[in-house]
Image (tube, rainbow, N blue to C red; front, side, top):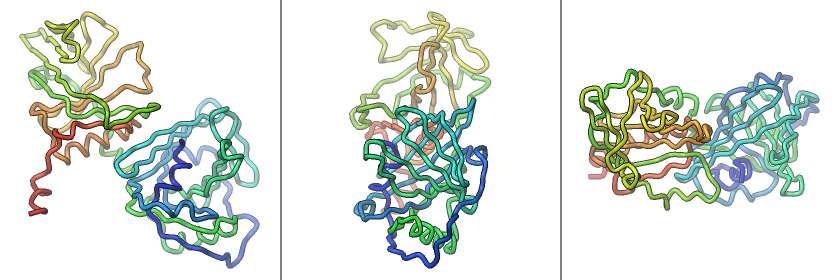
Length: 340
């Protein structure tokens, strides 16, 4: 189910029942389609009943990203609640604008969406076809993660004017744009084979949401090994020992490792913590929109701060289903001292 349906049941909130002081005919500002491009963080939502206020779950963050290309609008959405992350994506081909409101529709599996500009923020309402065209709450997104008290008070009034009786304000907001600026994947280049030589034990994996995927039931145990002898490098994977017992020779380029027995398969390395190895394996036949990311360490253990770094790196690539080996996690020293 898409993020907009889930957010009602996943927000730790402060609830308000408000009566509008004065309702104007037009509560939106004129704006162009290009102004919505990029990422927006969820700040608040408004609804006409208390269904959305019955949960105690804490939403870590939620965000939208709009991409405009060739007359289409692609909308990506991610939410994290209670340690579980969900990812969704829609593509809209019919785009119209009336009275300052941009309406998106046109794809069979994409529920119609209306976008409003309000004080440099974005208001979103979505019609869920499965719910007999009933519109879900009005969602307030912002480029920033904090709005002033006066802006939030105005949002309550605006919501009431649109017949949304209750307002929910999110807390503990995370600035997604700032996180990804500091945690985006950066390739290891040039590759130094002496630094990757040896055995690495997998401790975590990340991939995009898949139907029926349960990160708690994923078997990700195993190891990989790079043997370096001069200019020759051999790669072994414990999960493929049946057909690659002696390993596979690989060629080292500036940006990746290429398997000699299959020159369509590349191993890409990314910057990560000390004594850690972060990589993905990409073949020409793979779905480029869902290439898993694997996190390894030499010891088979990882401290919480390094694991958090990995999670953010994965999430910033929209790889929101994250599996970890529980026994591999270690508490940071400072964290352990705080509990003494």
